[in-house]
Length: 77
Image (tube, rainbow, N blue to C red; front, side, top):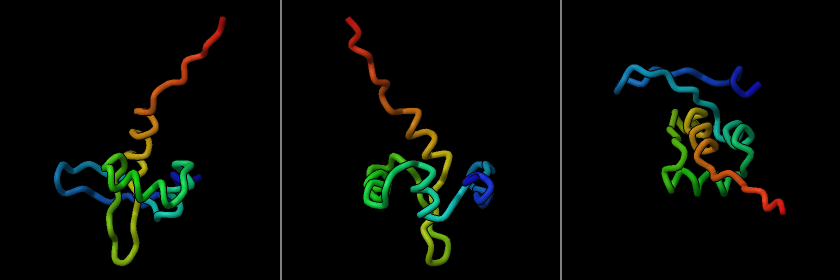
């Protein structure tokens, strides 16, 4: 559903397309709040861009962040 809202913008650096959504939709997609989103942006764990007065979140960077999370190991006896 969020992917349907994604705005695709061409990146002039390497001609790769980015899936950008508005900040609140990026938070919803990433399953985190705005404070955590700003934290992740400051730590460069996810990418954000300014488009006019709006902050846009790159959904691919959110996917990369989720993929980098450590797996929980079970403590089965």
